Image 1 (cartoon, chains in turn orange, purple):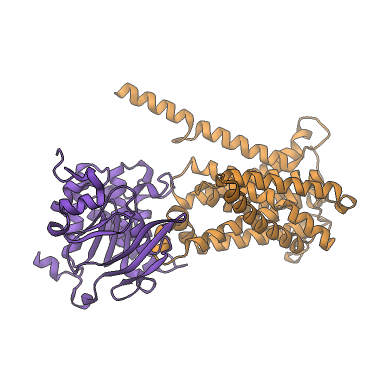
Image 2: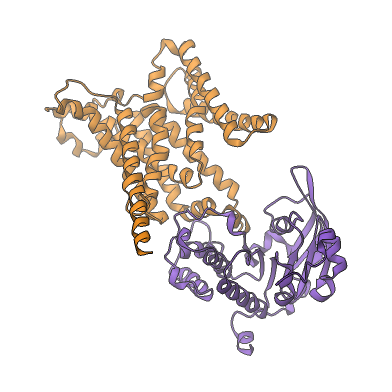
Amino acid sequence: MNIDAVTFLSVDLPALLAALFACLSCALVGNFLVLRRQSLMGDAISHAVLPGIVAGFLVAGTRDTLPMLAGALTAALVAGVMIELVRRLGRVEAGAAMGVVFTGLFALGVVLIEQGPARQVDLDADCVLYGQLEAILWLVPAGWSDLSDPAIWATLPRQVLQLAAVFTICLTIILIFFKEFTLVSFDPALADTLGLKSGLVQHVIVALAALAAIAAFEAVGSILVIAMLICPAATARLYTDRMGPQLALSLLVGGGTGVGGYGLAAFGPSLLGYDMAVNAAGSIAVLAGVILGLSILLAPRYGVLARITGRAVRGVAA
Amino acid sequence: MLQRLLSDNFIPTADAGVGALAVSGLSVAYHQRLVLRDVTWTAPARGLVAVVGPNGAGKSTFLKAVLGLVPALTGTIEVYGRPLKRQRALIGYVPQRESVDWDFPVSALDVVTMGRYGLIGWGRRITGKHRAAAMQALDRVGMADFAHRQIGQLSGGQQQRVFLARALAQEARLYFMDEPLAGVDAATEQTILAVLRELDAEGRTVICVHHDLQTVAETFDHVLMLNGGLIAAGPVREALTEENLRRAYGQRASGLLLGPR
């Protein structure tokens, strides 16, 4: 394997950073979805916002985040109203209503992409599913020595800077209101009796999840967003019983799979002698899934194996 | 007893001449069905209060409506003479054990510390002082040894004691408890009853949803009997009569008080 510095700096580094920040953001906010047993919410958000993103793109004609974000938020609101309508008029449970609405909206988004004017420009269904990490290029640095100049980091591609900003926002809010988020996630009724509006905090949690999902969406696609909202938090839960370590571990797993999955995709095949690279977002998602799967089997206390042997030991003792 | 009265914990009832809780014309509906109709009731100055009534009588709903957790159709709630919203710091709540997810990654001490979040302030760090107070509350219910245990690894009775410790840590004056004695072991029951009597002795008001009619008289001083509305209220001996029970429970009432023990 032989990669020169300029290729790494212009192709791999920006993609790696984008993947890293996308994974960190989703992993962090995903904790509150997973722990509140609302994993489906992440799925719903990342699917339902698609027509909004496409509409924002069509109206603005550019891939700037603001119009797409506005479109996504509108779509999220519309989805919320539709879910409530389907639930009431159809007299079905919330999960079913959510499932119907978000798949419907996602399909509408795909139709918009395939049939609409978006076809003429660079937005297609592949990019929705897998994102386009490989298309994020940083052509400024000419060698390793350039990185020591702080000013050069400001020239990073827009997607990378946006994802870094979103991660910073999510991390700051969650650090400041860690105790409030934990309280509302665990016991919203107590929060209300203490005068903390649990409904408001829950809306903030969902809004942060939407922000992370929408920002990550463009770079890494919907598959990775869903995987990152759920897998790192679910993995971390198997290793710890405390909130602090839970968040730290989920960041470690999210960031680690982001970097590791990208490395596997970009350099793995060439190590095996193939002259190619596989899709990065896809391999990150697969890696996250594999780590979760292994953890479910092997985690020290909550793993399947530990439970079986624990039961056997207790059985012998009894 | 005297020592307890002189301790810092004691709350003089003189300024509470207005009554800890005054509920007036409270009506609550769930899904367009009237669950509670026009309840007017003032908590007694002293003594433990049991809220009784058959399943679906609206006991939990009464608590939640008074706490502002479910919207009331009509009615006013006053806590120590002022609207509930301005008196939140004076109120403690022990919900039913099933109301939370015990798999949540928090320790017993974490949960009890949550009771002090109102005192700590929103967006502020938890200081050692508050952790110490939480630890003290855990100790009071005999759970200090389990402080760092994840809550899912506690028995049902221990979980209930953690919930009670959390309410103690709130240092409230008016407590609402939703069936704190339901399905707990004998040791837990003794601990909880002892704490309830201490709270009463300290001059705090405790209003407790209670399921077991046979033990009402030995534990509580007052009864609030509900079934879709107020059936009866007053000292146990006056309110817990066959006549009232029949009005609340229907014909099944016969023998509810004197059933097999």
